[in-house]
Length: 424
Image 1 (cartoon, rainbow, N blue to C red):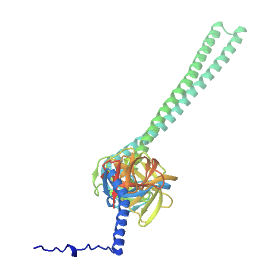
Image 2: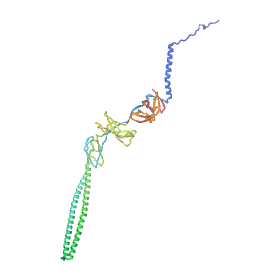
Image 3: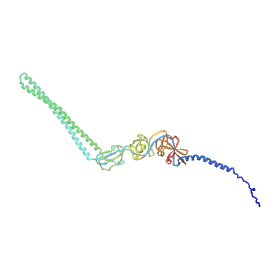
Image 4: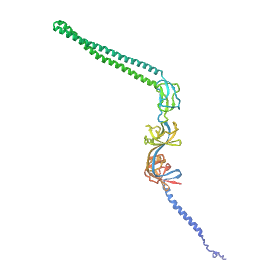
């Protein structure tokens, strides 16, 4: 018995796809294609880069052209340009006439040193000076008297010589007339020669003794003047026992207690001249070679700014820093105090039309030899030549152009790679 199959009853049913689904599938395919077109270049750049760093860990700045001001900013403290320290000029007990903080005038007595030894020595030397003055005056009187005696002897010798001449002439005439003997003429001739010898000696003694007396008077005079100089010096030393202020100002630090006995050259006190204040700043050694006296500066504090200028630079480096002083230009600011803290900005250089970029850690991390230029999400390592730097900018000499964007901070994460991808 044959069983009939159902093949005659089977028929093929065609599957129909709606147009709406086709449109959806086409849209999805197009979107995927666009996404691939957009991602593939980035993926290629990503795979070509040596590494990838998040943008949140970096700081990027744009290279600009404009004014470049190279300056130094530092904190300083107010110091007195003139702050002399006064010392004891002799041994003794010191009596202070002022207290710390007192305002004083120039030449005002600040302390008195009691020195009996010095005052007694002055009295002794003044007495010696008086004695030498008397000796000098007495020498002049003695010289005048001695000179008068010698002059008298000379005048008497002249008279004797003239008398002897007259006697000889008279006896010569008498002898010629035969009134006297030859013996009388010879005796008066001998008397004349004797008178002439005495006159010559009197004249010589007058000249020699006059020179001798003048030298003796000069010696007494020099001794007296030397003694006067010694007395004047002792008077100066005694006057210096009164310690006077060299300037108008204010008493600073006292180094001794009241009525303390001190040795010579001991420190007594300081005087601060408040009319001449300066600001002392510590400048890093790297900027020291660029500092020079007279450079302009801006001093800030108490909500105000004052113009200043560098007045002095220390010749030595201490702990990697150089000490500089900045003076105020123009009128001295009011209400400033010793050791008050102020901010100082010293202008080292100012130029126009200079290619610069914001200063960052890349300067130190790369040693100034290269920078990472950012293009299309990739940071390219680029050789550069950097110039001087300021507080917030660094000059670009070679390797970059205006408008370039470079990584100024965070390049330590690049590990020196030639290309680094920057991810969002």
